[in-house]
Image 1 (cartoon, rainbow over the protein chains, first blue to last red):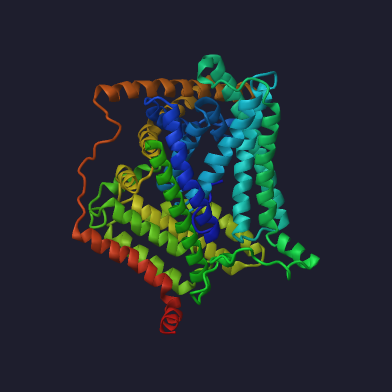
Image 2: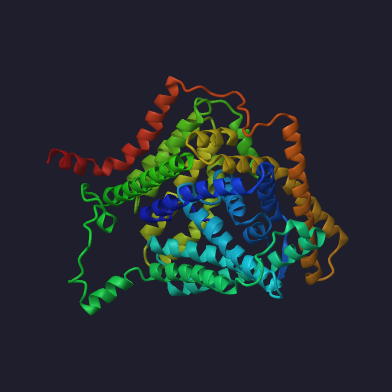
Length: 302
Length: 245
């Protein structure tokens, strides 16, 4: 689900851009370090492959068909950081050339599909695909990559105050589930076909033994996603509970932050206050990141 | 593929085409922030922003109907959410969401119809975007049509062979994708060797680079200043009062 511009509230898109922009920089550097130089054309052509894969339809039944989304397949063949870079490139081309997803909210779409989606698609493969659970792990990777990305997008829309009646939420959750099951099945089928042609194209999974780590990591990703979803559908839950328990009156901020409740009180008008608070927050985060990067670079040189 | 008319549009010539990509990108970001930071866009502001975009389209000598149609790519998602919002009892908000997303999409098309992708990527590079990511986007864009053509031919071949039930066709599609995956990998190796042979040093040469002119500065001033002024106009009395106090 590609979110277009205009649907997310300023604090939501600004915060996700502030997370995604430095993260893409880090992942690109990491992917460049892990790979030989020849991989830049490879990653680009693989991105084009994912685009082209949409031309090939998988029959589902009742006259409908689906196609590969690809983040789990990319993660299990190129590795997670390279897959995240390829997915980011795909999302950028979709936003600029195909008007599929917005520019200002590119950070949000990258976070959902290129980071969370790739991670959720890669973890089951990495930890479980060495043993007899191999087929299930690949299926689960495809399934989770789509489900996690879609749920996060839904959570961001809810957090931005787009109202959704429970019936609509239930229908969209059902649709996401079906799409995710289909992606799992397609990923597994393509994965097995690739393995038959050339087993060397699939990455080596981690040797068995990381089952506890795997379960914990997967549980963390799922809990994080569901937690965000619930927090955004009931944004006032915590405040409501605090009010009921009577602790709201006693609660006091430890630090008097300048951007209390995401508003900057210099301006009279609503949007100027909220917008400027978001932008100032974004600038502060950017400056902190830039300072940290400079410090790290200096330490490395020393 | 439907992005081809976009490439044709970038080859036209107009005062907007002639501007430097960094300037256009900065103006686009200002426009998007002006629209995207609004909770609800007041109608006079929305209409003024739409007229500004229209002026941009006319100055860029672009087919107005074609651009508006292209930006309509956001409508399926936008209309669905707008209807949901209206069903939840907030028709005004739904209309505002739809307007904001459509105006943003038209602004993006205005940039991509007057600026080639290599120019945009070069501008992003000067804004310190990661080099590997930009290289990947370049390769992706260059080989998009090649691989899409190959995929279409494979699909046609599979259909000509005839289907033997859903399960078989599912497996055949998976097999086609695996073959496409393999040939893409081999193609990437070939591309890399050919590039090395031609002396590729990690960056694309700029074809006909545009120098920064005084006209670019004026364009930035107008194209970034106008949406900001329109957006802030309802707040100007408040700002003035705050300033005086």
